[in-house]
Amino acid sequence: YSDKDIEQNIEYSYWLEIINFDNTKEVFGPRKITLNSGEDIPNAPKMTFMNTPYPNPFNPTTTISFGISEGGNVALTIYNIRGQLVKTLINENKRAGFYYKTWTGKDNTNRKCSSGIYFIKLKTDNFVKIDKVMMLK
Image (cartoon, rainbow, N blue to C red; front, side, top):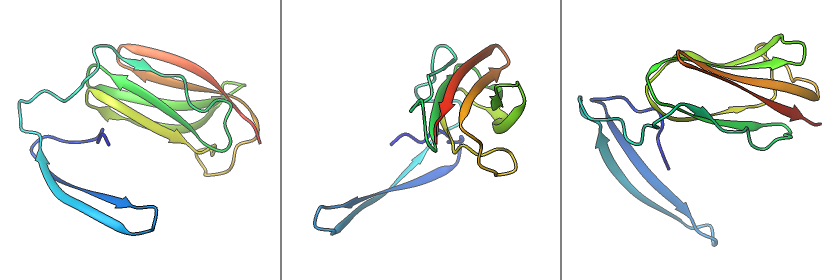
Protein backbone atom coordinates (compact mmCIF):
# COMPACT_ATOMS: atom_id res chain seq x y z
CA TYR A 1 0.00 0.00 0.00
CA SER A 2 1.23 3.49 -0.84
CA ASP A 3 -0.33 6.51 0.83
CA LYS A 4 -0.14 9.20 -1.84
CA ASP A 5 -1.57 12.07 0.16
CA ILE A 6 0.56 12.54 3.29
CA GLU A 7 1.57 15.85 4.85
CA GLN A 8 4.68 16.82 6.75
CA ASN A 9 4.78 16.93 10.55
CA ILE A 10 1.58 14.89 10.99
CA GLU A 11 1.68 11.47 12.63
CA TYR A 12 -0.14 8.75 10.67
CA SER A 13 -1.18 5.35 12.06
CA TYR A 14 -1.52 2.34 9.79
CA TRP A 15 -3.06 -1.07 10.45
CA LEU A 16 -3.07 -4.13 8.23
CA GLU A 17 -6.02 -6.48 8.37
CA ILE A 18 -5.77 -9.89 6.70
CA ILE A 19 -8.87 -11.95 5.98
CA ASN A 20 -7.88 -15.59 5.57
CA PHE A 21 -9.60 -18.11 3.32
CA ASP A 22 -11.45 -19.53 6.33
CA ASN A 23 -12.83 -16.01 7.10
CA THR A 24 -10.64 -15.54 10.18
CA LYS A 25 -9.04 -12.12 10.56
CA GLU A 26 -5.61 -11.02 11.69
CA VAL A 27 -4.77 -7.40 12.51
CA PHE A 28 -1.24 -5.97 12.61
CA GLY A 29 -0.34 -2.52 13.86
CA PRO A 30 -0.58 0.23 14.50
CA ARG A 31 2.56 1.43 12.76
CA LYS A 32 3.12 5.14 13.34
CA ILE A 33 4.92 7.23 10.71
CA THR A 34 5.75 10.95 10.50
CA LEU A 35 7.32 12.75 7.53
CA ASN A 36 9.43 15.50 9.12
CA SER A 37 9.85 19.02 7.77
CA GLY A 38 12.68 19.31 5.30
CA GLU A 39 12.56 15.64 4.27
CA ASP A 40 12.13 14.87 0.61
CA ILE A 41 8.79 13.48 -0.40
CA PRO A 42 9.35 9.75 -0.89
CA ASN A 43 9.46 8.55 -4.47
CA ALA A 44 8.62 11.84 -6.20
CA PRO A 45 8.80 11.31 -9.97
CA LYS A 46 11.53 12.98 -12.00
CA MET A 47 9.00 14.08 -14.66
CA THR A 48 5.27 14.72 -14.70
CA PHE A 49 3.26 12.04 -16.51
CA MET A 50 -0.20 10.52 -16.92
CA ASN A 51 -0.60 6.83 -17.64
CA THR A 52 -3.26 5.53 -20.01
CA PRO A 53 -6.49 5.12 -18.01
CA TYR A 54 -7.26 1.51 -17.07
CA PRO A 55 -9.41 -0.26 -18.00
CA ASN A 56 -10.18 1.25 -21.37
CA PRO A 57 -12.87 0.68 -22.61
CA PHE A 58 -14.54 0.72 -19.20
CA ASN A 59 -17.86 0.12 -17.46
CA PRO A 60 -18.57 1.74 -15.06
CA THR A 61 -15.18 2.90 -13.66
CA THR A 62 -11.71 3.66 -14.93
CA THR A 63 -8.60 4.66 -12.98
CA ILE A 64 -6.22 7.43 -13.98
CA SER A 65 -2.72 7.29 -12.48
CA PHE A 66 -0.24 10.12 -12.78
CA GLY A 67 2.87 11.60 -11.25
CA ILE A 68 3.71 15.22 -10.49
CA SER A 69 7.38 16.18 -10.44
CA GLU A 70 6.84 19.65 -8.93
CA GLY A 71 4.15 20.83 -6.56
CA GLY A 72 1.51 23.25 -7.84
CA ASN A 73 -2.00 23.45 -9.17
CA VAL A 74 -3.28 20.20 -10.69
CA ALA A 75 -6.47 19.88 -12.74
CA LEU A 76 -7.81 16.49 -13.81
CA THR A 77 -10.95 16.90 -15.91
CA ILE A 78 -13.22 14.87 -18.18
CA TYR A 79 -14.67 16.24 -21.43
CA ASN A 80 -17.20 14.77 -23.86
CA ILE A 81 -16.70 14.45 -27.62
CA ARG A 82 -18.09 17.99 -28.08
CA GLY A 83 -15.41 19.43 -25.80
CA GLN A 84 -17.87 20.18 -22.99
CA LEU A 85 -16.70 19.75 -19.41
CA VAL A 86 -18.32 16.65 -17.91
CA LYS A 87 -16.51 16.10 -14.62
CA THR A 88 -13.80 17.80 -12.56
CA LEU A 89 -11.96 15.07 -10.66
CA ILE A 90 -9.21 17.27 -9.20
CA ASN A 91 -8.63 21.02 -9.16
CA GLU A 92 -6.29 21.82 -6.29
CA ASN A 93 -2.70 22.27 -5.26
CA LYS A 94 -0.78 18.99 -5.00
CA ARG A 95 2.71 18.22 -3.82
CA ALA A 96 5.16 16.31 -5.97
CA GLY A 97 4.33 12.61 -5.89
CA PHE A 98 2.35 9.77 -7.41
CA TYR A 99 -1.45 9.86 -7.50
CA TYR A 100 -4.43 8.03 -8.88
CA LYS A 101 -8.08 8.95 -9.26
CA THR A 102 -11.06 6.82 -10.25
CA TRP A 103 -13.79 8.15 -12.52
CA THR A 104 -17.12 6.44 -11.90
CA GLY A 105 -18.72 7.51 -15.20
CA LYS A 106 -20.77 10.29 -13.59
CA ASP A 107 -20.84 14.00 -14.35
CA ASN A 108 -20.50 16.96 -12.00
CA THR A 109 -24.19 16.67 -11.03
CA ASN A 110 -23.71 12.96 -10.18
CA ARG A 111 -25.73 11.75 -13.17
CA LYS A 112 -24.55 8.70 -15.10
CA CYS A 113 -22.91 9.55 -18.40
CA SER A 114 -23.92 7.81 -21.59
CA SER A 115 -21.78 5.38 -23.55
CA GLY A 116 -19.25 7.05 -25.78
CA ILE A 117 -15.83 8.60 -26.10
CA TYR A 118 -14.51 10.93 -23.40
CA PHE A 119 -11.27 12.84 -23.01
CA ILE A 120 -9.29 12.94 -19.77
CA LYS A 121 -7.08 16.00 -19.38
CA LEU A 122 -4.28 16.39 -16.84
CA LYS A 123 -2.98 19.95 -16.55
CA THR A 124 -0.29 21.30 -14.23
CA ASP A 125 1.70 24.52 -14.32
CA ASN A 126 4.15 23.00 -16.83
CA PHE A 127 2.36 19.99 -18.32
CA VAL A 128 -0.77 19.11 -20.31
CA LYS A 129 -1.80 15.68 -21.54
CA ILE A 130 -5.10 14.45 -22.94
CA ASP A 131 -6.08 10.78 -23.23
CA LYS A 132 -9.12 9.23 -24.85
CA VAL A 133 -11.33 6.68 -23.07
CA MET A 134 -14.45 4.84 -24.12
CA MET A 135 -17.35 4.02 -21.82
CA LEU A 136 -19.37 1.00 -22.90
CA LYS A 137 -22.62 0.00 -21.25
